[in-house]
Image 1 (cartoon, rainbow, N blue to C red):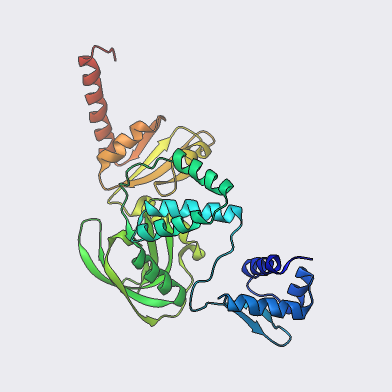
Image 2: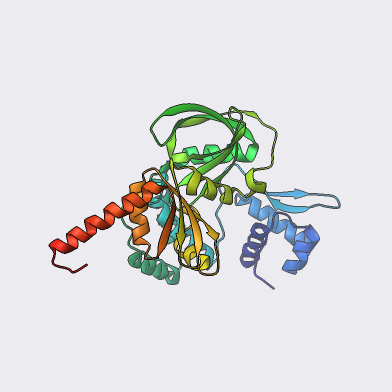
Length: 324
């Protein structure tokens, strides 16, 4: 038989693991009488945990949103994951959460067992982040857009495109995708009668929420990650290119993420890369750095840029006395 305090922790753990428990099932899992379970639930409510009870055939217990945040019950793996996430957030790509993340991390580490603190300290000393050169997004903007996606609310904002031009947009948000370096909003644009992808760091100011909109199936049968990959991988750029890579598609897929280019199988030993860039010069030097044989299908200007680059390298090698 568990002690009263141990049983309360067990009740909390079970309630947080599932949205709803039938009273009889929860009492059976805890091996206590239903009256004992009711007393435990009342005690947890006095401690601030928002537990709701319902009667009838489908009656039972469930956590619901409360007026304040009660203490959280975390196991070792969960506590470690939260600590790492908070530490990352303090220097991550979401601005406005750094101070809150550090305060939460301090509170968490104060109550951590020594074994966990040692593990977190070892991770902290081993992970040395580089200076963050990626664009950051405001945490409040993310929260507003997440609310709009969840509650199907139209959202209006000022959007700055890649050329720095700002336009007023009013869209029906479907969801947000994080690629590891940037956040994107996928939304239906009624003015253009099409799906659009917006870089959230290019949203100027606070988005404004308005009326509800009727739900619709998202692009690509609802696969927002695939839609964003296609949108930002090729079609988002002003310059387009097709290049044959002389390596199997499986091997190249490990080097080239879908957010950079789209790969198409040509045969067992080659694949076609569909890529884009705002400046073909950057694409030319990126191809040279891939360390793979390739043939440019289009555009012809890319071949001209590659020829200029190789001539410049040859001249540099000649000046250094290195035979070509």
